[in-house]
Length: 205
DNA sequence: CAATGCGCACCCG
DNA sequence: CGGGTGCGCATTG
Image 1 (cartoon, rainbow, N blue to C red):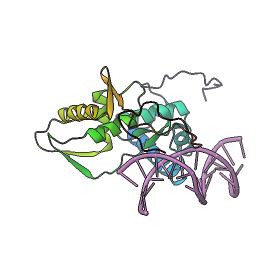
Image 2: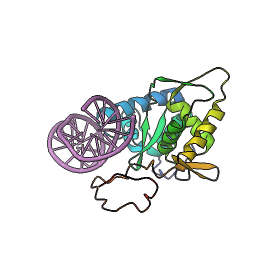
Image 3: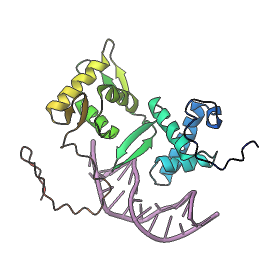
Image 4: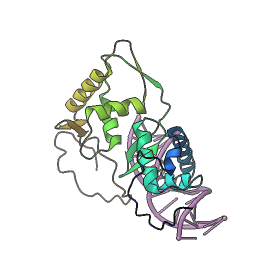
């Protein structure tokens, strides 16, 4: 009616305003997103922002940027997880993991390095970020009186010792032995020898 | 053209 | 080995 609009040039004025995408609750978005993801997965395709946007589009048309924001919100609320895989991001429904019992001395170094890898933050991930991801991507059952933060801290410390992680200021990145999956290149011609396999012997031929 | 279907290469445990 | 994943291409709307 009122919009003779042609301009899609609007910047994002919707983040917390009162516009179209906001008459939809977060739960509804979550449902759309999760449905979309299931559909996309069943099509054997990557649940990327664009694909999810398309899938949702069959319900209601939204611009990809809007959907992107909603995806990030869902991630922030823990209703969704975002993982880094093969050079790109993928949104996933949080897995219904087996319950992991965690007590004060539990060593989660393996899991925290996995968390860092999956977070895929180029700058590295903060302790807080790691902690959040750990809670979202696992079903963690804390033993009474356990300080989860401390457990994470120790896990990171251990991971550093094992070179599963490396420290960069306040941030942590994956060590070189927990390498990222090759960024989209199936044609694996890597006759390139590792230049620094000094300490660990990689039994490649 | 976009959307969907799917074989199978790839990765990781 | 076993199971999940998603690329790349075929197929369909």
